[in-house]
Length: 221
Image 1 (cartoon, helix red, strand yellow):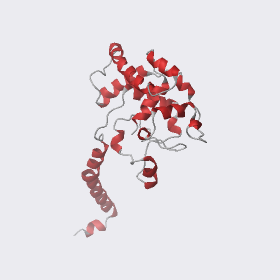
Image 2 (cartoon, helix red, strand yellow):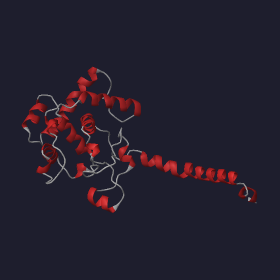
Image 3 (cartoon, one colour):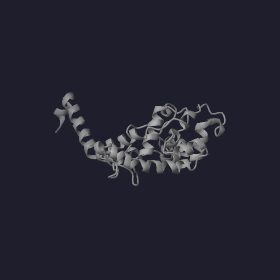
Image 4 (tube, helix red, strand yellow):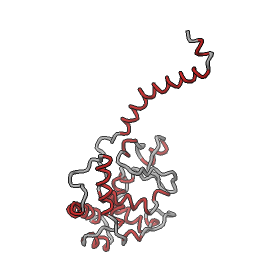
């Protein structure tokens, strides 16, 4: 019946392509769209966590650490459950990375504490003997750019329909009204830290970069 099609390589190729394309539309794309939706319970980054993510990118943590656990036993044994696409629904940009000079950090919030991160960022070898990671002591004095992170939250809420509350809205007055929430979150991080200068800075209404970075790392679970 279809001998004429078998004798015409071009039409045969077109036919195969159409069949595969139809199958993809019916089967593959809906499953992909479903897997890309936010996993149950996923919340967007807080403004403080967004500021920490920006510091993570600024200081090139992504150059040595990935945030993507592949579904291989060797990886899940070390880092925990493999990564799901729906876990990245609110990540812009994705920080999957392509190199592991250091360990993967996608689940680091499950097994590292604020105190551990404080010691590690101040002097890596104090908690990881032989570590080649440099110290990031400047983070303990540099101030995090919280206002820019707030503007980012406003943008992704309005452009990408990210589910932030009604208190995330444009305008200087809105930012000033929201700022106490960021400071309250920062105080909870600083309460678990030992560095007196950091504690004093947060108490005085400032947020050192280290506090924002730790907030971000604690979010990765």
